Length: 184
Image 1 (cartoon, rainbow, N blue to C red):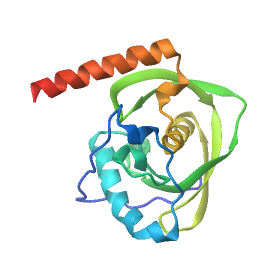
Image 2: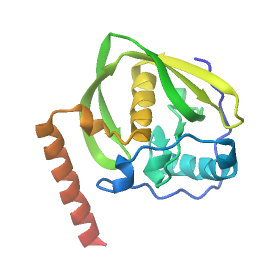
Image 3: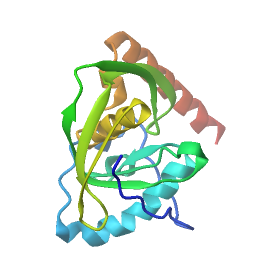
């Protein structure tokens, strides 16, 4: 796995994570340009703080209401932080072999479903310094990369499951969010 790892943010305030049915989650993010560098530099620490606080292993900018092609991830192997920043990520290769694993999403709290995706992917991206990078992997890494890139295209993991399962899950989420709101 060739990826640039950044230092995790210390003391950054978490950016609030948008929850379904927030319409921004269904929009396509635009490519990050050099003009976006100040905004991206400001977003990264808050996105990591939100992801770690949730806790989660990946977060895309649309999940914090910003329609830029920016993802932060940290699969934390051996419980050691290894944060990765992916700017303008794109899948450049994927296996024909599929793998199914349970997925969840910070924008659909406490909702999980089995999702089938390519078992292996290769992704090209830029790191936070603008350097071109590639990362490839299978298992959890492949699923996380595909899940987060989906967010950049307005796609949620529930779009990969049957309509029946999706409707059940979304109704359950709406009920739980309503109950949480009533308890506040």
